[in-house]
Image (cartoon, rainbow, N blue to C red; front, side, top):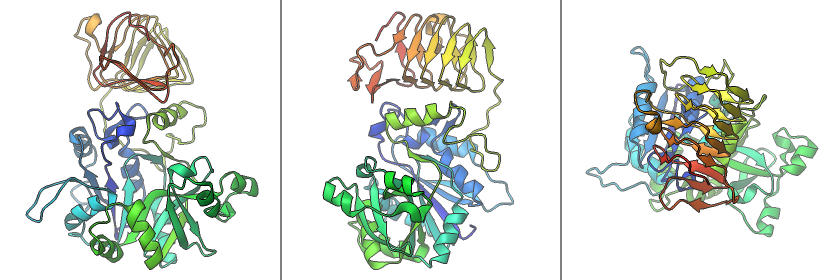
Length: 422
């Protein structure tokens, strides 16, 4: 796909992922113990031989920028690059990005400065593995102006997504952003057997949802961006209009795809990696997930009991129990601690020189259940994070922890005093 440029949208404030986005951009949120969300679309691009990649950023992008700069460096004999384009003030004007389309419009002067025939628009907070070459071939075969990647979904999922209908040839004839009324939902039902589902599967998933992945002919994208400056969002504004005026086709995607823009979705997608046969398989030599290379030692486990878990590099766990959990890089787990159904993001550096009471990690005899502990957090000895009252939403008055979607979330660098019980 040497004739295609990829544009990855860095997202807005990421309020649905708070407090994981308290001090970082959404695509910079850690994933799978050693990766970041941004690694997913960039890896898909690299594995699809797409080397012209732009990442549009705005909010709290320092750690994201540093990760991209230190991770994705193509050699001197390649024309490939991963360029960061931030919202900027220029002689032409400029404001904060007002939406997905507005972000691309403001960055267009940079994107269009290099030759390309097509532009692939991607999200920075989805988990999936796709060969964009197949996407590009379907776009070319249909002689499409715009192709949208779609996936069949259930009636319960449809109100949270953009739903579309196609004709017999795969051309999109109608699009509704987040249909909610029964009449809208009934009208947008499709025969999804055309997208590879069995009759039983099609009955359970009768709606075609946009995955937020768009492939434009470059001239078409240029035209729609400049046509109406008030149209700021692809899903809400530009896609419905393009369907009326352009050749817009659907590309059916049959693999695993998850929008992990909420704490609940993020939690489920990460813990799914600990299962024997996860929906997103990390063990894939043909399409690996790339990230920053770290010279870390192997995990050191001393009398630890571990069941159905992922343990990353540099972890030290002593005389503890870990069940159905994901333990990130450099995590330290003290004696007698118990970790269940939880995600520990680990640490950005070792803190072995500090006294035990101030050391980053999980203290002795602590118990963590159904929680996400962000990087560099210090959980004191005997702390019990078990959500005794089964709360769904809660903010600790001191900002030590939060509950979102019934999941306890400890923010980055938080310090929980010994003996705390929640």
